[in-house]
Every structure is written in structure tokens, then in C-alpha cells.
Image 1 (spheres, helix red, strand yellow):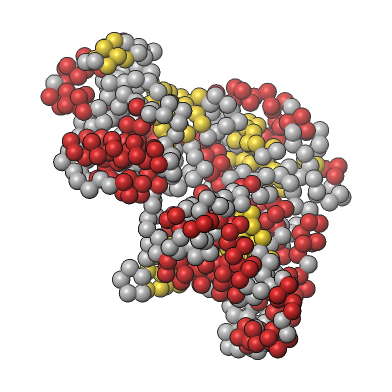
Image 2 (image 1 turned 90 degrees about the vertical axis):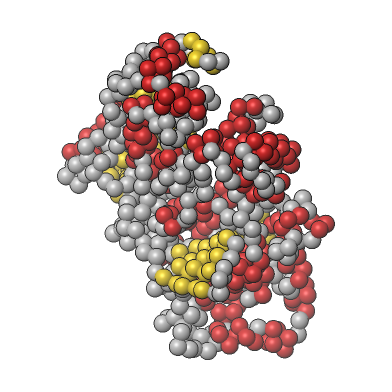
Length: 450
Length: 183
């Protein structure tokens, strides 16, 4: 901004001296195609657009790190507002900011503090932003605490991939995802090249399952204070409906937490269990694992340098999954997480079926069963129309078969399908649901746009 | 490894907006997986599914009519809710029919290990169906959710059987009322 432009050129030179050493000289760790040049710094500052997802513990660190590395076109998205308990580690926020948007406060702070930085805030859920929004970025880096959100983002970046006619990946459509995560003294950072290296869905098994207790234990033989809290959460809340039957338990509502705390204490007393506290109640209800500021700092720094490496090619990227454990000494290990050839998200299973525009669903169904390229047994066919799932035909489930049987007689166009539309086909003969793109034969020579 | 950014590719914006990307929204990974699970559902002859909305594969009911054991002749309805984090997290399953059963409480909570602590992403809706069916054939008094029923099953099998029958015909067992659920 203004202060950035009024800097003298010597100041400019000195400010980026260290970065320029990396970008204007070659070295043994450079990417083979790296060509040292002062233009790379210009690219970082003027063109390279980075999206930071999450403005919490990792997000604050990432925004600061990337701004100080010279990135200016930064966007940050977070739907949350600032709470008192964030302030020990989310250092871009102050006590006066409590209740305000995390994304907005973080951006305001960094733009003021780092001359030239033009970060933009988005105070909304990631799901509120569309393909056009995500497509504008060169790299996405995320510091999230939710697996659902990671999977959604992963799916979004996969859906932006373009494939050539020979089914090879169009590399210009790849938006790398750098993902960081922390839990107490443990953390991980990874680099995902959508369609090229292991994605979130490929390694879904690596996420630890949520800690749950057997229902019968919490119901009959509680031994831990957590068992008492879980009991109230899982069983007593639904039974007593303290705020009416449609009110879901909200871990952020102090009245709800208070009610659970009281009932859990009663239960603990009955079973001779001690140490049910308000804090523990809150922790169990919201699955809180205490956050450690230095874990966030280390993981975010690692992610930020991966972003820098990807953007500049001044060094080859991490390959591709780094774990860090600081619970007992400091231990890190980096390994190559492998891409699953049958991954639901990133294996390019899309195939094209050519069909007459006047064809019925029955003809597609027959083709899938009879065409030697498919030879399916009982394909279940669904699609997504205007963001809504629609079941076109599924023979294996009686109640659905009866209600979708009439669709077989209908023309594809009557069912809302169009040239270039995707249908999803599940069958015992394929390891996953397959995406099939319809290509209307009379449109052959026209480019397949909607 | 590829070099993702040559400086030539700077004009990301213009290029991006001009791309032919389909405006069709992709189905979520959870949706793709549940479609696969359901299409391959291999139900025992005692079980059936009902989909109130055929377009919504994430919410459905499973009806079990056991043909042997204590619960022979009954008709029990379970609701399945599959969340966006499937298969990382199991579906939420509740029993909608009031039943006198050691592992199912009067609110419809079901104590089945694979529905909570032993769930794994490799398991499918089919695994749960078999798990639930097994609960009716072999109620497990060691892991009780309805303690009264469990104690009775252990101490007096005949009495337990009578109570199960009474509950299925519709009536009171102890202070709890059960709606008739015979087929």
C-alpha cells in the first residue's frame, strides 16, 4: 500500500535481500527447471494468489509467514469469530476483537503491519464460495481442525482438474494444496498435487478415529469423568430435552454446557467418580484438544516454506507428508504417502459415453450392461442437478427401483441431463462409483461446454 | 515432479475465467461411497430398506423382521443418517420401534460396537445390517443398555422371553409401555 510504494529503492533492496539470495542464484537443491531471475520476486509480489483456509491457530501464523515472505495477493477465509480462549496463540487478535470475524481482524492487522500486503478477508464458510472463486488461486494452504472441511476442499480442488482427450492430466489446472494440522504437541504438514500425488481421500485412514466409548459402558458401568459427560450428551439430553425437542446440544452455548455439567456431576456422584469439571465438560462436548502455540508455529512455518517452494521452484517440494512429534523431545519424519489408484476423489475415473440426444435412460442402462467396455451387472445410476443429488435408476433396492422405473422410458433431456453432464454409476464390477460424461453424438464437433 | 509455475502462467485470472470448466457440481466423496454401499447392499431375507426420498440416499430406514429367536414375528424399524464425514464416521443409527432388548434402550439407542468405538472406514452399511440382525438373534446381556432386560435374560430366560412377547404384542413390561410391533 502507500507506505510500500514510498520506500526508497535501497530500502526495497535490503528488505528482500534474503529472499533474493534464494531466487536469483542457483543451488544444489533447486528444481531442475529453476532459472534464477529477479522476475520471480515480482511474480510472488504482483501475481501469485494464495488462499489461506482458516484464520485460527495455524491461519494466523500462515498469514504472517506468507506476508513476510513477500506474498501480497493473499486471501483468507474463516467463518468463526474471535473468542477469549484464542488469544494466547492467535496473536493477530486482541481482547477488543472478541466477537469479531477472525478473517477480517487477521487481515486488518497484517495489512497494517506489513507494508505492501494486500490481504483480503472472507468471513464465511468454505462451502459458500464457488468454483470460480477457488479457480483463481495458484496455491491453497490450509490450517483446519476439521476432517469434513478438508475433504470438501480436497473435492473442490479435484473438481477443478481438467483432463485432455487422451485422459492425461492438464497440468495447468492443478492447484497445489498445502495442508497443516496440529493436535497438542503433534503436527503434520503435507503437499498435495491434486490428481498427481496422494490426496486427503487417499489417506483418509491415517486420521485417528474420534475417541468414543462403548455405549453400554457409559450407560451402565461408568469409570471415568468423561463417561459421565458422554452419558449426559448422548442419552440424557435426548431424553430430557431441556430446551425443547428440536434443540441440538450446542457446545458453544454456556447454558447448555452448564446443564450438562450439572447432570454429569450428579451422575459422577452416584457412581463415586470425581473430577467432573466445567472445563472438562466443555472439552468433551467440543472434542477440545489443548492447542500448543509452538506446534502451530512450527507446522505453519513448514507449510509456508512449501508454499514458497511451489511458487518459486527455488527448491524441490517436500515428498510429501511430514509428521512431527514434540511430546517427548522433537521427532520428525517425512515419507511419501502413495496415491491410491482407486481413490474416490483423485483417480480420474471419468469416462465418456457417446449417445444420441434422443436416447432414453434405458439405452444408457443397456449400454452399461452390454458394451464390452463395461459389462456391468446392475448399475445404480445417479447424478447431480443444480447441486442436488438425483437418483435416476437403481435396480438393487426395491423401494427405489419401483419409484425410478419410469425414468428408464424417459429421454435423457427430460431427466435434466444435457450434453457434457456427468452421471454417477455404481456397480459390483468397479471398485468405486464411476463418473461418466455424456456426449451427445450430434454435438460431436462442438466443444463440450455447457 | 513438475514445475508448476512458469512465469508465463502469471495471468491466472483471465485464463481461469475463460476455461470451459463444467458448472455441474460434483458429488461429495461421502455421496459416492454411500451410492456404492447401497447399490451392493445384500440384504438377508429378513431385512428390507425404505427410502422416503429416492433422491436422498443419506437418510433411510431399515426394517428387520426376525424369523427365529426371541424376536421372531416382530417388525423393527431403524433409521440411518449418513453424515458428510462418511465413511470416516459411522452412520447414526436409531431404533424407532420400542423394543424390550438388553442392547437397545427405550430411547432407541443401540449398543453395537461397530456403530461407535469399533467403526472402521472399510466397513459398509451391509456390515451394520448384519450387526443389527445379529443383535436380535443373540441379545448380549454382557453389554447391557437396558440393564433390567439384561439381568432378566441372565437370571430367568423364560421370564425374559415372556416379557419380549408381551412387549411385541403391545403392553407394559414393568413401568414401560411398548407399542405392538408384530408383523
